[in-house]
Image 1: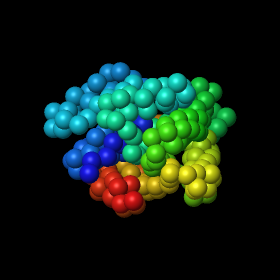
Image 2: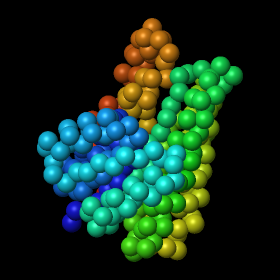
Image 3: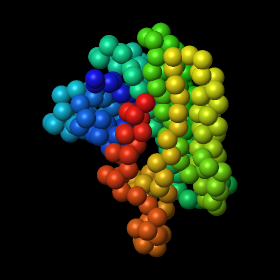
Image 4: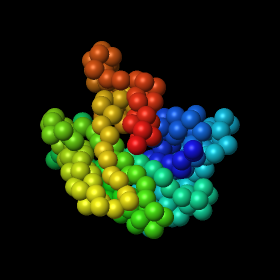
Length: 229
């Protein structure tokens, strides 16, 4: 039986990879992003191979956008079975006092408020429809590891991990379930974008080849975990 899956921040990276993976398996997918051109491109590319895909503009830092996204998916496909809080913002590997204030605010708003807003909207909508699953994607900092230059990003992911695990306890006696997924280090623009110059990136590429995973290897595994419930 096909499910309807909403993925925030899915015009590229892991979110886009998951969208493609779910579509391959015959499920309905709503992709979203905060830039119209990127959303249009993602939907067009996916629609060339799959019919059960739709796109909705959504800035997860705006509560009303999350509400519109849920409503759009429900109107398009009837219900929302899985909501994935994937949207996130990283920043260059930089000391916190050297990070522009707007970069700090963007990371905190997207990674923390985005998870809270998306979860709140999805829970309310899923309780009304009779149930569903919410997944929060973890990142560096979720497990308590620290690294110089990633203090802000790591803090937001630690907060998101705490929020997700606490939320799972809050909904335990309801028809809604909440879980977190740790994809590990995956080579995407978010990871490579943390390095300020091509020279810095080239220095760590050999390490990435050893410890990081390819997107095409990771997304099938993540999809399996989310569907096997």
